Image 1 (cartoon, rainbow, N blue to C red):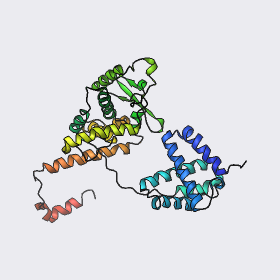
Image 2: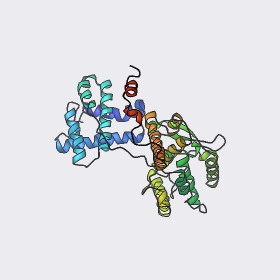
Image 3: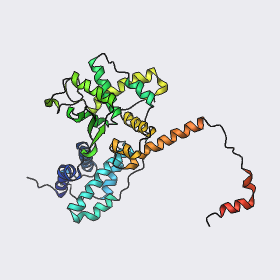
Length: 340
């Protein structure tokens, strides 16, 4: 029986023990890291003639990782953001190796010094409150499936949940009695309690009753199910959003962008909270952001929206001509010397 290499040993521990245990990363992130190294070993086998079972830490260096990243971009047509995700897996692995295998510190630091690539500025897709009300009114309330879709879309907006957070919801995560809340499990299995407005809690109460989800034994059931009574997936939620978004865009194109993703509900909720005067810190906690800088993007968008409104309603009070004091040498010198 072939003895595993030191690379295989440390990679296995990294993926199966360190990431889920100490780092507390979500299963989705761990799967992404696993795919990164699986693809990396394929690259080494095909282009470097190093078989997976022979690969050791002595092979892992900055030059090889950079060649792999370049191969991803050129041969597999990966965009910069995908390349950065793959690089993040190597950075995380090298930080782990520095703790577990000190002999590798020098090589690990060289790989950690590989910079991420700058990506295009991400636009934050959002719609107005009027457009959101129009969209949430599209499902047919006379059918059971239409009522499910209405509750799903309303909760996606009212809770500001990520799509995966919504898909993972169980009946027991919903509290419909006052104060009504929903418990969301976000990135890194971090949980947060989000308050629900009364109309949303009323909708959920009716939905739970109609679907016989009020008994204790149902608390572990998925909140939203597909036709096969299985848990509704991210793809299933995306399909429902696309279905009603397409209908809404067709009927009122002036209210919507050409395409509308599920994440637009989360962005729109954040913008609407900000416009209602909610403090940015509360919005950060509401959305489950780790860093306030992530939330600040909504403040910048809101400021830009206000600027455009001002420009549209500008009455040209400010002239582009220089005021008379600009030619007053004495006054200009006085202004320049303030504080000196």
